[in-house]
Image 1 (cartoon, helix red, strand yellow):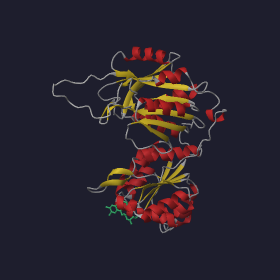
Image 2: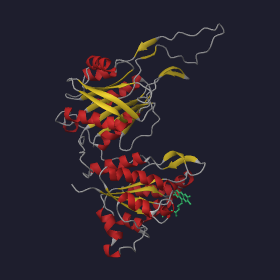
Image 3: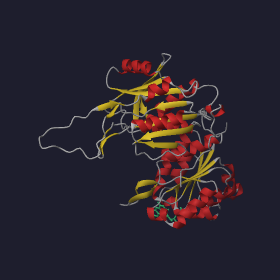
Length: 426
Ligand SMILES: Cc1cc2nc3c(=O)[nH]c(=O)nc-3n(C[C@H](O)[C@H](O)[C@H](O)COP(=O)(O)O)c2cc1C
């Protein structure tokens, strides 16, 4: 298959430098990228950088190489146009159909999906003019990614930051996958599948100000959700206390405690082809929730907290599968004798795969990296060397995909309508 053609439009915001990282991700993953900056964008990153990184000539205006009619051809040939960063000015021009440079002409001639990743000061983003332009673009079918909250130009912070290049890349890859324009060898092998992923760590309330919790960040579960969506699955992510923004194109259910997580996972698993339990679920919770804050006493003593067992969700969904052939994956974080404990846990829980990782300095909790062994119920071990959590996520789905039942859940009597790509909420 020919390389998918992506137009990367760059408009004149301070975040233009981040588009270099997006460009790198797109080209390295097999896309043919044509960069079309605006004149203003070149104040931030020069044409030489865009040209060298993309391997294509770069122009901002329609008067160069006129014999090739670039103002029409670039847009017509594109499989996807992504504008990152999209300035307030660019959103306004796109919403009103102005065409005074190469990028705005390209936006009018493109008939492929169009993604805008806005970045600007909070005041500009919140201005009714910008909000109306965004609403207009979304109404016409463009995907406008919500800006992130954080540090803006100078000392200001607030909503308006360009989302990370990795997130914009995922949105683009998901859209291309769904339009059958996957780059490289990777096939969207989870199309038509519904998968459930749990992420984060549950918190078991003790009193109105305290809880028993754990150190799980949720990053591995989010990586699993993002990768599954990129491979074409409909994904339900049940997250507990991560604070991570919802990934685009994923249905997210927010929960707090183990009991809530169980309820949400069981509900979502009813028509799921696979359930991956990456969340760290508390084994115990306080037997009694104190209505008022537990106070220190003058006698210097400390209260004794009685705990009760929480439900074992992994064992429950493994033993009582909602659909025949549903694949269940568990996670185990161990501190010693990792493989022996992992094998024993895999047998005890009855799941199909168990991802075992050692809790250590650089890995597991809060880290961007992980190192693990994926144990299979049929006895196979797949060691995954130290590396990004996305890589482990890809390997988990590589192992899940061949184990999936031949009839996707959507084709069964329990079928649900699979929504098309959903743009992030307005
Ligand atoms: C230092 C600097 C940073 C800017 N950052 C942004 C920005 O992040 N978002 C934005 O909408 N405009 C920003 N602007 C204003 C735009 O550059 C200006 O509106 C320009 O006309 C946009 O042109 P373009 O949309 O054709 O690229 C910035 C301007 C300067 C001088």
